[in-house]
Image (cartoon, rainbow, N blue to C red; front, top):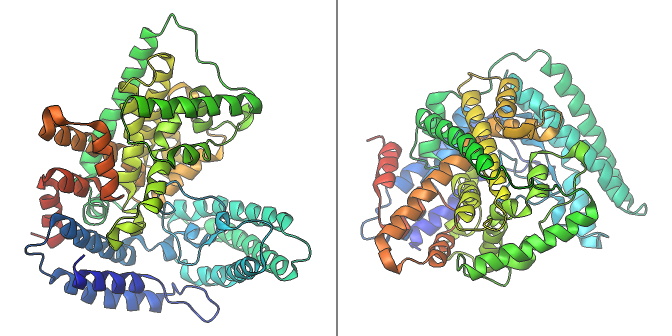
Length: 521
């Protein structure tokens, strides 16, 4: 990697982190954000002045990624301002690992990744967790100063976020030993602070009345300058409308084709769930191997087996639980996420820029797009040839993702409220699988409101990935090997699909358009 670019990358990542106050809490107060806003242009100018003449494509891509991250901070400082508009930004406790390189949505810089701790805690881990939990009360106190916006849906959506944190803190309290007095005290203080914050949000939220979306123009700027998606808001709407209609029409044709077959049987007990999921993991991995779709790696089987989830009774059976308990393999296709996260750890990229998670969820259209594309591509590759009814599940998954993505676009254009976005998603998801009485619905639309572009990334990324596959295979003709294609995609890192396409095919039309947007030409 170019030495100057490497130095600028290290300097940038250090600058991007919020300064810590004496109590260990990141500083998101207005003066601190003004300092960031004043200093950022100098970093951007230095990066822009760095000549890429005679650089290999891979290094040019690294520079573009660094520029996109800087644009992400610029956008956050000028438009999104999660520390001022989004109460959920101040959530600290995370009990589960994300299936993408980093947590979805804007997060502060002092997260508590509880899933990384092993219980019972060793003394050093107990000390670390106690110190981390002690940041929750002062952070939430600072949040009351920082949260000044009138964004109604973002504000009210933060309340269930902190109810979840409260519930997780109570579970943690019950989990730790009674002899761990310092830790128990830190948990108790965090519980009290979270309860008081929920009350404060509830009282203040009753007076909120403003929109929460960023608007069409800002959305397009963000997609093109930060997430490097070569589409406008209007183009994304057209694409998602098309995919929604295609999914519904294909489902009807599939149902007609299968009309004389017995319906799929839903898993209706924990014991059956364990048996069926174990069998389906083995079957799916065998399909990938025997059909020469992936170069199989030692970490794939244990990684997939570790993320099969759990059985859900009917009363709490959300959309993905219904799908998984009818055809588990449909979700195993989407769990390509876990394969590539393991790949990142076992076979880290040689470039520091791509070695970890890109900031500001810039990974979304690549990670979610490929995971979503895998569902339909594996169906077309023959995964369900012995059980055609399973194909219906794939089309329902696609319809749900198109419906929720389209709703999120209207939400950001301020044409929908959060409630209207949720209603649209429910109405356009087949068979009533998207239930309004379960928290998944609100969680999804609230997340996509918090993180522009994430809701549509499943479909826009799928669209771009299919174009990449077409271009890559077309260049290789009879020598094309699907497993080699996926291997090369993995080796590029979890970066925007337009950049993967340039690196793998040499086709840079999308990149040139994006660069023109970046430079204002």
